[in-house]
Image (tube, rainbow, N blue to C red; front, side):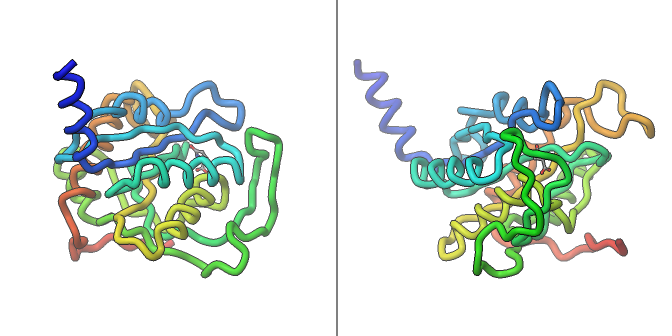
Length: 224
Ligand code: PCA
């Protein structure tokens, strides 16, 4: 069938943007990062095809699945998502650290303490996404956002560190963004953002990640 043939020829030529999220964890029944990935899987963003995948919230397995996705898709850009309940806005992470110290068990019941993600790896890797430009773009659209300097020490940081380690010798822009809880009516007692706004925010973040090779020079630091 000619249309199918030409479709597969186009999709092979189109660079892939790998977008991952996480399954629910810690007793929750949903995870907005999973819902965002499902909404954007297969979509076109800035000349790239989004390949979405949901990772298990399990140390080790998540890292192996991520590495398999990198081998399968050979992506041009990678953005991993996870939820950070309690945060009010969207927070691109600046740094992944070589540490696992789980406050709660992962979805397999494992709870590593004071263990490196990769034995012998450097203490940290920087995100190669334009984190400040992403924040600026979100703010321009009225979406609360800030640069974060800690992705924690649970499975999100584990995946973020493993991602940057896997790509350390490759010119593939990659990083991690924490999204807040999905709430219908955000307020001081219910920090978070509606899911539809989060999908829009991540779409904007992906566009900026594809288009900007260098970050903006603007304030984005914090005192604590
Ligand atoms: N958030 C957790 C793990 C999975 C997720 O979505 C974290 O921040 O580590």
